[in-house]
Amino acid sequence: MKTRESENSSSLAKSKRPAAPTQPVLLAGGNPQIAKGYGDAPVQAYIAAMPGWKSDVGRRLDALIVRTVPGVHKAVKWNSPFYGLDENTWFLSLHCFTKYVKVTFFRGTSLTPVPPGESKHKEVRYLDIYEGQLDEAQFVTWVRQASKLPGEKM
Image 1 (tube, one colour):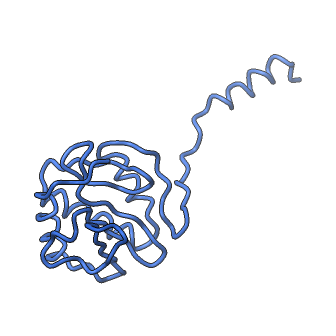
Image 2 (cartoon, rainbow, N blue to C red):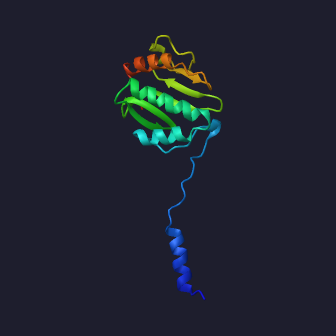
């Protein structure tokens, strides 16, 4: 026979169990909702939560950026990974959409050749990467150039 005390201790034990890890919420277009944070861990959490083939693209982009810009700073802000020269100056970011991954080059109009996606912001240019369409050599060229330009303060 259970006593009130044994029931209370049983429910107390259940409440102290660690919660099962949950998958991040996917916002409009499948963009993962990841808490703002600095360093590699939040960026890797974002990449792991990218749906489908986009996660593979995210891992590849991250590896190419790290290889091209040793010591690159990383953060997740506004549910997007940012890569930069320090914790306040960024040269590119990623964002997940339904059918593609968008790379934002904050000083994109200064890159050669200029990335194809236009922006309402004067210097920003975009690269939309669809499944199977990553030109790694061109991407690395842009990353190398972008990392040497004055970044965007955020």
